[in-house]
Image 1 (tube, each protein chain N blue to C red):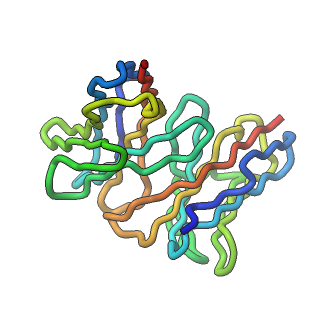
Image 2 (cartoon, chains in turn red, green):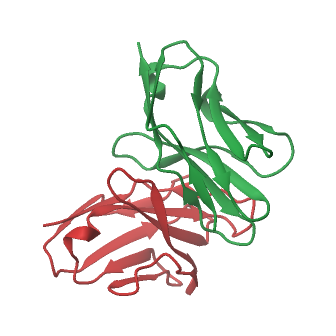
Amino acid sequence: NAGVMQNPRHLVRRRGQEARLRCSPMKGHSHVYWYRQLPEEGLKFMVYLQKENIIDESGMPKERFSAEFPKEGPSILRIQQVVRGDSAAYFCASSATGGRTDTQYFGPGTRLTVL
Amino acid sequence: AQSVAQPEDQVNVAEGNPLTVKCTYSVSGNPYLFWYVQYPNRGLQFLLKYITGDNLVKGSYGFEAEFNKSQTSFHLKKPSALVSDSALYFCAVREEGNNRLAFGKGNQVVVIP
């Protein structure tokens, strides 16, 4: 049973370009979460999605960042006009339900470097 | 707002000795507590969680954690550390009513052969 898949694993962008990060949840999971890990820091919550719905985006920056989880296909985290401060590791997690006892399982992450 | 504190940046322990990684939390209402481990350039691996019930929770790879409500703590323990346990350990908490995890900054564990 495959775990959470993320691609690409490494992404290099120049300032002003767009970054698109993809996440495929574990089989049978319909809840997806995105977190960002800055150097020397813990993970910070960004957004929580179910299929075709954004449930909680309280951690998303107000500008340039967006996320979606379409009916078919992976969840996408999109960063427009990237800046150096966007350089970080972006982790996706999935869970089977949104219940309080549910465990979030994490993917290997995408490491974004902005030149 | 929910938050987690992991007071020590790095924990050094000799192989075979007991390992403890400390975590305290702050939430409104009932806490749901988690420990994850991260190896270099890898994602987070789930170790164990406390939801309710017995205060001592057993998890993967011989790890366990003790929930202490009065001290708002959830320390991770292993009776006998292995060199392969050297990694970054994260404590996380989730408040009842929302789905987002709040993570501590992490503890680097170094097990010395």
